[in-house]
Length: 234
Image (cartoon, rainbow, N blue to C red):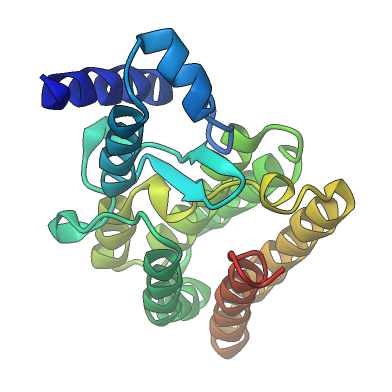
C-alpha cells in the first residue's frame, strides 16, 4: 500500500513539474503541506521526493527544502545512458564533462560557423540577457545558447551530445533560492551574461583559441559558483 501511495504522490508532483505548475527553481510544497494535502505519512513523502531526485526532476537542499529542476524534453533521460543528475556531485561531474566537449565545439564554431548560425547564437544570447526575472526562460535561453554554439561547430555529434544531455544540463535551483541573497543572484546572472558575450564575441571574430578559452572559463566559473553555494560551503 505504501508503495502505491509513494507512486501516486510522485506521479502528481511529476505532473506539476512537467506541466509547469511548479516552475524550474521553485520550491516544492513542504513535507507538512504534502502530508496534509495527500493524507500520507512523512515516510511516503520522503520516498516520493527521493524517486523524483533519481529522475533528475527535484533537488533537495538540507534545511531549505526541495526545488524543481527543468524536466528533460519529452521525458528523455537527462544524460545518455539514463544516468540521473540528482546530486551536487553529479552536477559538478557534468560541468567537468561539458568543459571538454563544449570548449572544442566553441573552437570549431569560430572556424566553421555560417552567418545564419552566428545569428542564432546572437539571438539566444539576447533572449538570455532579457530573462533575468524569469527562471524558466533563463534556463531555456541558456540551453539554446549552448546548443547554437554546438550547431555552429559544423560537427553534428556535438549537437547530438547536447540534445542527449537535454535542458537539464542547465537546470539547478536559482542562486537566490539557494543563498537567499537577491544581490548575489543579480551579480551571478550579470556575470554569466558577460561570459556568454565573451564566447559570442570570440566566435564572431573567428578566433578559435579565444573561443575555446572563453567557453572553458565560463564552465569552470559555473562549476566554481555551484561549489560556492553547495551545502556546507556557506
